[in-house]
Amino acid sequence: MSCLRLAFFSVLAVAATAVHAADPHSYANVDAVRTRSLALDLDVDFKRRELSGSAELQLEWKDPAARTLVLDTRDLTIERVEALDAKGEAHAARYTLDKRDAVLGSALRIALDEQAPRVRVHYRSAPTASGLQWMTPAQTAGKKHPFMYSQSQSIHARSWVPLQDTPAVRFTYTAHVRGPKELRVVMSANNDVKHALDGDFRFAMEQPIPSYLLAIAAGDIAVRETGPRSAVYAEPSVVEAAAKEFSDTEKMIETTEKLYGPYRWGRYDILVLPPSFPFGGMENPRLTFATPTVIVGDKSLVSLVAHELAHSWSGNLVTNASWKHMWLNEGFTTYVENRIVEAVYGKAPADEEFITAADALRREMKETPPAQQRLVSDVDDADDAASNYAYVKGAWLLRTLEARFGREVFDPYLRDYFDHFAFQSITTEQMLEYLQANLIDKHPGKMSLDEVKQWIYQPGVPDDAPVPTSQRLEAIAAARKEWLAGTRKAADLGAKDWNTHEWMYFLDGLPEKLTTEQLAALDQAWHLNGSPNAEIARRWYLAAIGGDYRPARAEMAKYMTCIGRRYLVVPLYEALVKTPDGKAFAKQVYAKAKPGYHPMTQASIEKALEKK
Ligand SMILES: [Zn+2]
Image (cartoon, rainbow, N blue to C red):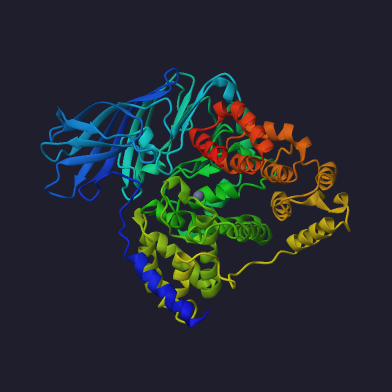
């Protein structure tokens, strides 16, 4: 690196630390007052598609002059607001609900005569709540009962609870939830595997959490225990396969504890959702929500569990103070995830996963505007903060630190970091200050603070960023090259023993436009069309769209209709809209698939379809 660049980076880094820490994605007046605990009392009404009841917030006032409490809401109907005095007596409170902002929702401004220790809001959610999905029986695996689940990250908790919807505020919570008998209600709290299906559930989360980790689901949900402190919840027809796929959960928890200290949340359960779940997984504390698309029968995609479990340290324990610092959650977690995979399944699969992700990022970098390649960058919509940069580039920085300082230094450092900031919400600047004092200054000459800041505040990835090597992937790259050059037949690729990640690596590295003959030969040899493995299928359909390979369309339409995970289906829509014919096909598929998609998936696809 030249001196000129170093100087340039230092100037920018100073500017970056000067940005204030407030959260642009919340209306909450957190400098004046903070929520310490939340008590929910809710009815789950499938007919009306609403949660109704009350949210009682216990408050800690920071500013003696403040008499207003501002909460975040989106599309909630507010029925009344009460202030509770020190004796617990309720008094009607005046409030106004601001005009709706498309991204942020409506601020609920509650005017108080005095600083009430508690405030109770009576409300109903909208059937279109952005953080809830209400599914008809036909949209579930069992077809008999409806299903409902939440997805609060990043700023969707406000669509089902009026609250200070910013990761800067942490609170404990209790909930009393009533739903239809026969169905089970679960939350990101203490679920009881033996709870009777009596329609009356009570929950407590004793550790303070940020609002995006509030989670609820209700449906025909069965349970299988997978270890002394872990279980799988899923629809009855899915639960056995899920328990088998996730049978290494206890091993993963023990591994992570050895590396980074005790698991502090009691139980670690997994709820497998219907295929419409918009994400791979969501690290709701004590109860990870997961897509069924990782249940492939050979544990090849269980790094998703490693990822969500890792969040019990990075994210849930040490939390980004606002969404522009999301890499503190996701980059650290992606790094820890890889360490868990290495410890449980070996170095080769862990390296393959990292190489595949790093290669994909290098390719993506050619098309992303430089400003979006920084680890810390301002985004209009908090949902846009979750980029590959936050995940993969963030993890790559930690890998670089590990390589420079050595595991004997870096592992205990990271463990201390989690202890030091446990149950706090922090900014990148706080992370950097700690890094300098406890790693860089203690072990001079390994990596400078300026180098770390370059990773964080500058686009791209330094050329000397460490990448492991994999003989198997090198052999696959060589086979791919020969096949593309026409010197090797598709049937001779040697793919019989390829695992999921090796297939991903092979397909990711194909040029965008293959010929019809090439695609037909590949499909004939390896039966990619209709693959039950969602990761392989996603890449095959992208290749088919690039080469306009029509025989893939029927299975592609099925795939896009059955699955609602954004990462799997949105790129297909984005690729299809590039041609008029593809766009017409995409619109046709969407018309059928839309009712089964989560509101967040619908929003992403509609954005893609509207693009000129
Ligand atoms: Zn994550």
